[in-house]
Length: 158
Image 1: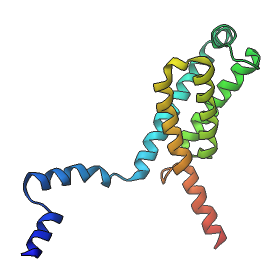
Image 2 (image 1 turned 60 degrees about the vertical axis):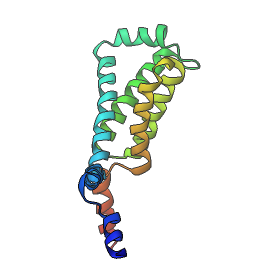
Image 3 (image 1 turned 135 degrees about the vertical axis):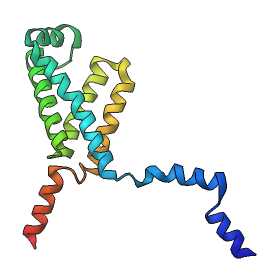
Image 4 (image 1 turned 45 degrees about the vertical axis):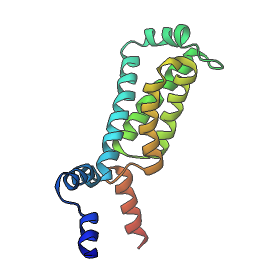
């Protein structure tokens, strides 16, 4: 009798069993796909931001001078720095090349935006930071140039 009760508790039949199997389906999604999706999503945000800055550089300089009001840094220096960080960081994160370093750089951009520019947009900034923290803490994943480089370096050491 105990074997039957052990079997039914570990693999229940009916609706409960079906429900448990369904809610466990996402566990079969490869983590590398989640890493890739996070990288593409956050890279897109910063790529678009950089493109809009480049589309009208005089407007960008005006925004940095009048609206963004970053302390301790001249707008004529801040604008190219931010644009370069967004362009470089988005490309590196997208490719998964030096992705952890790029994630740190973009987390710096997010921090500046959150603290000094648009603190009321904290939910959006938290979303970006979460994706970047995933890349920082878990790496770029299998579908990345970091992974290719790591495998090549491992093979050359043997």
